[in-house]
Length: 229
Image 1 (cartoon, rainbow, N blue to C red):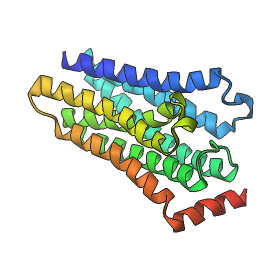
Image 2: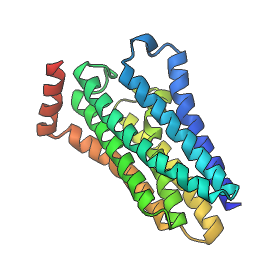
Image 3: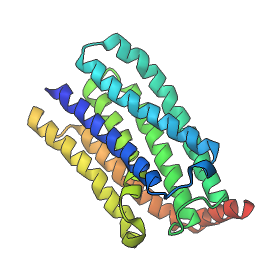
């Protein structure tokens, strides 16, 4: 019963991320032929991550531990590529001014860099904890909750939300943490420390993004990148 929850949880997260980007493109909010190749590469890698996330949970449910471990090695390398392409995509988006007009240079750069680094750090942490199943699975879930941010950014009417948009997205992400915490209490009677850690990191990402975007030296760096384009 416990593993069925994680299978369903991973499927729901994957579906939201895919739907968020798919409906955004279907509504004509992005000119796909004009999108740089590195953005497409980053998107394909992220789709691979979602596929591995769901597959890994299904393999555990079916007791295929050896295959789970083999695919886990692939997942680690994939997470690294996602981080590198995400950092490059964020940098080039600022340089080419390919980001929503309601963001500043500093905010968008801080958003992409902070999220990508937090995602990578959580995946590495989860891999280090691979022998501690309950920690491992929850930190991996936490890393993917971070990846929900850009999907919610395309599902919510961000231009209408103004400065509240970032914090409303945080609330949406924390709903997933709350569901995980509810599951913890249902199964064990208490909230697992990894769930609390994931929630704290998700919240910290938003605080760091806001702080960096308002930090004058970082603003100058972002503006210099934009000016170089």
